[in-house]
Amino acid sequence: MTQTITNLRQTVEEVIQRTSILDIHTHLYAPHFGELMLAGVDELLTYHYLIAEVMRVSDISYDEFWGMTKQEQADFIWKKLFIENTPYSEACRGVITALSRLGMNLQTRDLNEYRAKINSTELSNYVDEVFNLAGVESVVMTNDPFDEQERPIWETVGNDDPRFHAALRIDPLLNSYSSVYSKIQAWGYAVEENVNEKTIQELQRFMKDWISKMNALYVAVSLPNDFIFPEDSLRSRLISDVILPVCREMNIPFAMMIGVKRNVNPQLKSAGDGLGKASIEAVENICAGYPKNKFMVTMLSRENQHELAVVARKFRNLMVFGCWWFLNNPSLIEEITTMRFELLGNSVIPQHSDARILDQLIYKWDHSRKIIAGVLEKKYQDLMDAGWEITEEEMERDVANLFRDNFKRFLELEL
Ligand code: FIX
Ligand code: ZN
Image (cartoon, rainbow, N blue to C red):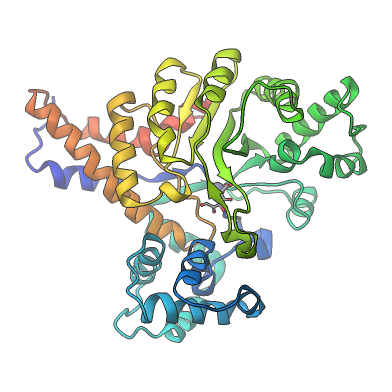
């Protein structure tokens, strides 16, 4: 037994600070993906979370807003949400945390000054600088073969940047097959709109080719709040006959992100999605029906969180992950993480960043780390009060599990 902990809070915080993270779901890209890789202050300020917020405090028309250049939109958002209002919403505070940790003088409130400083950094060094500030060792991208900008990069150079792993995202295939099957046909697969046996085989071949091409760590999809499984639908059939057999054969998880209501307000474009409570039976049925498959699941509605944790107690082929999107707020992260630790102990992946803009890694992880540290400290304190001394090595093991190793073990990657 090594030395006893004298200052619990400080030790937990230090362990959390020095443990590097494998961020299992982001929308970031390696620099060689060109324009797909977003970074810098104008991107930070025009994050879709902030677009939704700025519409609430101004009466600008949607057309006028979308007609502005990115820099004009950023200037507008800065003025409305940061100067004319106090930026304490989570998405606003995130920009402040990122700017501050990048060394900006926030007292000047001079956006042009921040813009000039951040834009002067060379991108490749900037990736390392941001990863370093965020304490992130690597991230998983969201990779869509149906995206016309992204696809050619996979067809030519691929990816060998060890800081960026791939995940094969298949929303178009599962959620709008009739609008993508002709593309798949054109890429050399004998698929038809009417999903017959030959089409199933060819879709399996398509999936395997893309998993290999990307070296994808998992296959992912976002699903609406009315997702049901199994059911008499094309999506259900594609999941059971294409996705699950392929994931099983390639021994990779199928990640389901459940509960999004797309386009609740289409005028807001990428900021216009909402959420709804989903049926937990879909998760129970798929985990029970396919015990040889691995599932990673996150749900968007707060109301689904408790039942999701209970399902994970029943099925070890289910890994619960993250506080997704509208749940990525301090009060909810604290509540959900506490509940998960109480029901599942150390066997969860408490958070992912969902960063779309490189610099967001800094604030998303800065904020989440603090909350996870607070929750862990409370759990350790309760144990110590009950007479169970914890060592720093045990804390290190726990935090490494939460931040990296549970994911790696679930995927059977080398630790
Ligand atoms: O579907 C997803 O992966 C979502 O996370 C995104 O589409 C969403 O727009 C987002 O950025 C949430 O954080
Ligand atoms: Zn996402």
